[in-house]
Image (tube, rainbow, N blue to C red; front, side, top):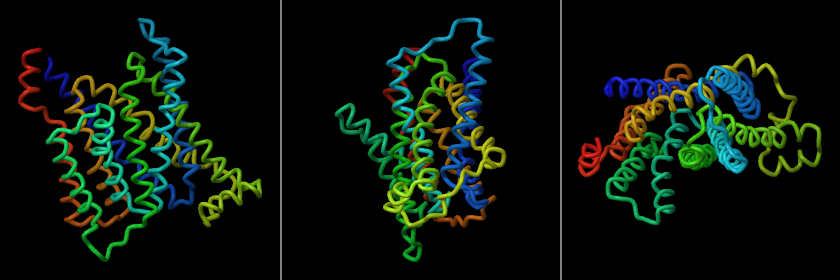
Length: 327
């Protein structure tokens, strides 16, 4: 029975990671159809929030036991933590404007070693040898996966900057979501965090697209950051029925639900290994649907990053013995 639960967990986490890995390709496709980052993120978060509210309502009226409710303090903390969720999507999607999806996902995966650094600051302990080795492997894999050793390849620094910011923001999202209000049902917690993320998205929509369209002072403020005025235009509502639903499903509804169903059965270590499927799926989707060129050396880099994730999450002999004693 236990093995069946683990297999079920692996399938849930693997499917969730695969779906999330497809997301950036659809974002890139929406850009090619003329939609802006503001429109893409607004549609994803708005429809995602509506979808989660509907699912939460169904769960509330069908549940046989009373579901836990958050305190006011927990609501405030989750909304604040949710802002990193909005920042992750925003930074990642901006990065995709400047660099290939196959490069952007590699930059996002830098959260693997970012989390090691954050953990060492929080615990005030130097990471163990296994984590240090894994971090070095990730960095080596990143050099290969982004094809930096090819001097002819020039990566847009804007894309690298936003991609690394997305990784930093994603690291904060992982830490906060795993520590705050763990007693809450998945859907309720996701709704509150998504509300915080939506605030960031709406602020960006106002300052990057709607505001500069109607206000000269906001337009001048906007031009301090970029000379690109293509995004200053009326909101294109067709994003909701062209890409909005698929972005909401693949980005904010299905993966979190599947992860929360799967991780309790797999455990954090195995779950983290399986969730790294997001990387090869994202690169493969970009190769198939967008025609992005991915050479052998980049695949070697991707394999190295996956190996580092496996190394970081495999239990040591001491942990195995302790686990066997407890079971």
